[in-house]
Amino acid sequence: MTTKQKAKEIAKILDHYFPNPPIPLHHQDAYTLLIAVLLSAQCTDERVNKITPLLFAKADNPFDMLKLSVEEIREIIKPCGLSPRKSQAIYDLSKVLVEKYAGKVPNTFEELEELSGVGHKTASVVMCQWYGIPAFPVDTHIHRLAARWGLSNGKSVEKTEEDLKNLFPKSSWNKLHLQIIYFGRSFCPARGHKKEECPICSKYGVAD
Image 1 (cartoon, rainbow, N blue to C red):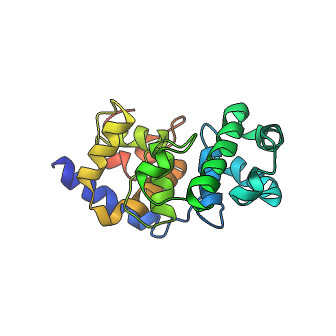
Image 2 (spheres, rainbow, N blue to C red):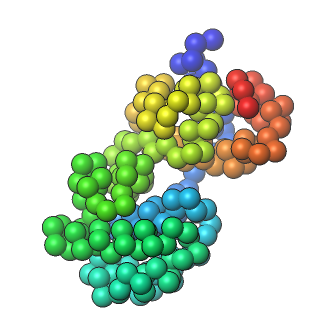
């Protein structure tokens, strides 16, 4: 079986278990999604979803965010970790959105990745989950599973993204990255993984 054929079979399994995966981070618009994704770095989605309502009650748009000090933002988001860096990034990117984009979140990779604290993965999430533009955000979980399933060599997140984009149809990317995340949480965790009980690893897993 070729890697492409295996990818096709894996996609069928993912469709079976998670036909309509919801977006895990709560948000109302592109701005609140962008902030939620930024906060999710090295933090669980569950915790982010507990903290964002507190932050957005004070500021759910870049104009109001600039009325808060970096220190005020930091106090609210502290439970998400990396708060000094994240609070500064939230303030700085809000300033750019107001000054350069009239408060709107841009819808190109180039413009998003120029914003403070926004890397390629964060930009990819906003592009696919809000703007519906095909992207394949690869987080540490997808990176790990792609290697475990033999879909990529696991050398780097960039290589994993490139390999997955080559293996799966572009039309499936936006849903697929969420399916892999949910599948990993349910059946294919990093620790305590039982290969024989995983619907994918029991058939196609390469290594742990």
